Image 1 (spheres, rainbow, N blue to C red):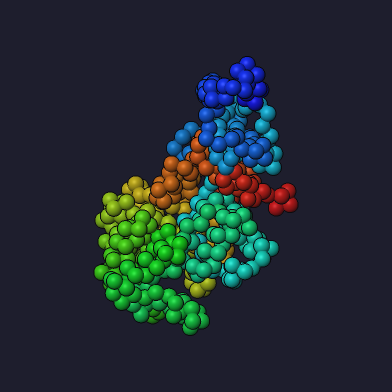
Image 2: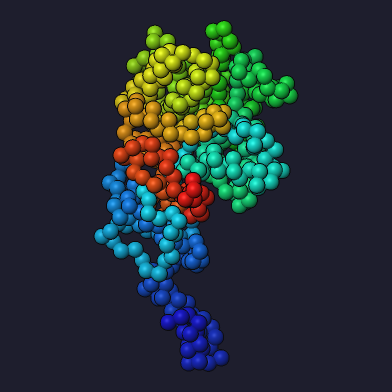
Length: 446
């Protein structure tokens, strides 16, 4: 019986002179109804528009769990409410999200290495929605990314994008950022030298440990979630400028004190070793090296022992080498060397995070990254882990995202095909859903 009806009946029975007793009885009746209907939620059920049913040919609950065939997912109020398969009928009376049903369902993807440096994002605070939404979609949600890590862009633009997404002005992923990267003293890489002088002057190049700590503090005060260090930078003609050990360690220590992650651009194997010793959490690239200077078994072992994660960015190397007109045989050899680094790291039990360097790379389609990771020996489920459970764990969010599990955030990707049969299917995105809201739905023409 509805509580208001009970209130009327109880009030009639007790009369107007026993209001205090009536209130006590009402409290008991409300508690009884709450307990018997399992409805003791602290907030009312979300509106019908926020509660819906997804159906799929297959559901990957998580990379380390058996998939469910002929599956369904109930989304309610931005969270996963229930899941099931053909043997479990979904609840009645829930509208079906037809545009996003009928595919292969997984948890939302994370791209752990991209940039908002394209001209389309300049002045993001004042640009119109129509100017920003298409490039934002093409960089992120079009490929299933519900969380992204900005590994170095103008903090003002990244901050503006994040704020406008969270206010609902733009449809986009959750954004984690390292703010403005930190470089060795007088050590900006040669490929940045064409930037405007005013921009170059803003790029941090600390000369001391205390200066590095101050830069980290400023970054966190302006919204950073971590720090990126260029521990080694190419200067041209084979010269490498390296960040001093005390500066790198101070930056890492200050970052960890603030609960952030340290992401490191290594450039070469010596840079990888320096990053590990400094306390890096994530190495953001493999490296392209001569056969005599690859990653040793000892180095890989140190990375794994210290729980350092790796973002391979294998697709980047072919992109860069092609721009430099490196002959195809040399290009292939160098990319193969990077694949071997990933293979050794993965075999040793290292945690792999998916990332592309899109934004710096104008080729936004990550299909080739999936292909190269598979060529390096990663299985489709290992690749799915690099997109879902691994980054959720790395960013201390494993209790709320990375799996399609009741109570978790409704960050979901629906694919048109099964990536277990072809890793290219990871980019065949039908729908991208974040916190229960459909951010991208492929039209028949796409």
